[in-house]
Length: 77
Image (tube, rainbow, N blue to C red; front, side, top):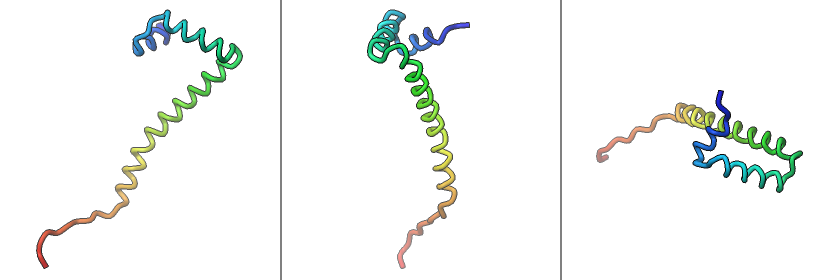
């Protein structure tokens, strides 16, 4: 089983050294006790964003289905 870090590194084009530096900076800025809560909040934000982006097109389709169709006729009176 592969770890998510190499997948993330491959996607972002960063190597293990860059990811390590970022982790060290986060530890210095926020401290070890705050990182789990920050990661949880970030995960919930991403989950909510994905849910909202999936729900929005369905709502738009439902709104369009409720609209009455307007037809234009061309011609002179």
